[in-house]
Amino acid sequence: MRRLIIFMILLAIFSLTTACGGATVDVQRPGASPAPSTTPISLLLPAEKETVSPEATPAPRVFSAEELLSGEEAASFVGKPVEASFDPVEVSESGMTSGTYIYDFPKADGAYANTMVAMMCLVQNSMISPSELEKGHDAKWAFEEFRTILSDKIVDCTIRGAEAFYVADNSDVHVIFGDYYILVALRKDEYDLETNIALNKEVAEFIIDKISSADVSLVPAG
Image (cartoon, rainbow, N blue to C red; front, side, top):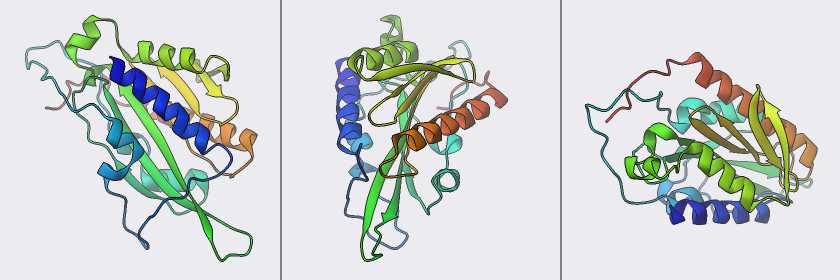
């Protein structure tokens, strides 16, 4: 499970490097969504997969990142047009899938724009390989690992009654909700941490409500 830990560390570093404003990226405009293979998230996803037996006990509902937060929904939260791309849902070592959301913060003179690369990640037990689950490396474990990595920067809270924390100096919000570990890292304002923390809490609540209202007894596809 070292790759998941490495991923979490790199994700934390990526978040910290964009804490004071949008990360500038080379995005073709207008309209073309970034290829998943070029996003920071997809480059870090584990390559190996394990197949779940068709005879396995029905597992909790499997969600895609797009199902929980589409590009249109992200745009309604940040108040700007959003280009979005999504990793596929597949059984992997980490059980993680993610969405990448790209949008612009125009500068005051209107001549240039800072481009924000934001994300939402979902670790779900139904998509973690059986060998890792046997080691106790589930969504809750990943949540606690990230909490440990960022122990000097986190503020604990609850969201919809679920255990959660946010990263005080860059506004990322982390929630463990049953079999799902949700990480939300959007920004509505380039520099206002309180506004961005409130935004990510709101998005996390929105995602939890979607999970809560869905049929959670379905067998994973594939």
